[in-house]
Length: 167
Image 1 (cartoon, rainbow, N blue to C red):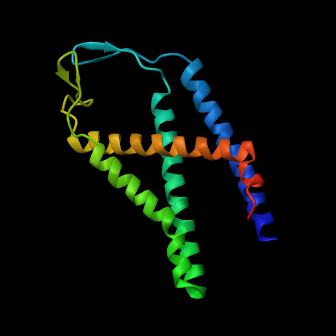
Image 2: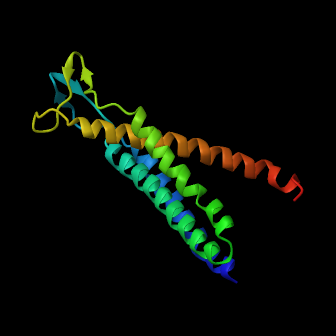
C-alpha cells in the first residue's frame, strides 16, 4: 500500500521533471544565441538559455543530494531501534555524499580564469571571487560523479543483472 502511494507521487513527478528538462534543453540548443557581450575586450556570444540550463542542473543535483540525505537519515532512525549495528550500514549513503563533497572540494581550485590573458570579471568589472571558482568546481565534480553513477545504475537496471543474481 505504501509503495503504491509512493509510485502515485513519484511517477507524475518524474514525468514533470523530464518534461521540464526536455524543454530547457530544447530551448538551449534550438532557440539561438543572446546578445553579444564584451568581456575583457572580447566579444562573447552565448546561447540564450545557458543560465536556465545551469540553474536546472544545480536544482536537480541539490534535490538528489537532499533526498539521499533525508532517506538515509530516516532509514537510520528506523533501523536504529531494532538493530544499531544494521543502522550503521544505512548511513553509507550519507558517508558517500560527504566524502564526494570533500574530495570535490580538495580537487577544486580557486585560481582565477583568464581569457586571452585577461582575468574574468563580473558585470561590474570586479574580479570574480576565488570562492565562486571553488564552488563551481565542487558542483561540477559532484554532478559528473552523480551522472556517472546514475548512468551505471540505469544500465544495471536495464540489463536485468539484479534479477539474475540469486539471493
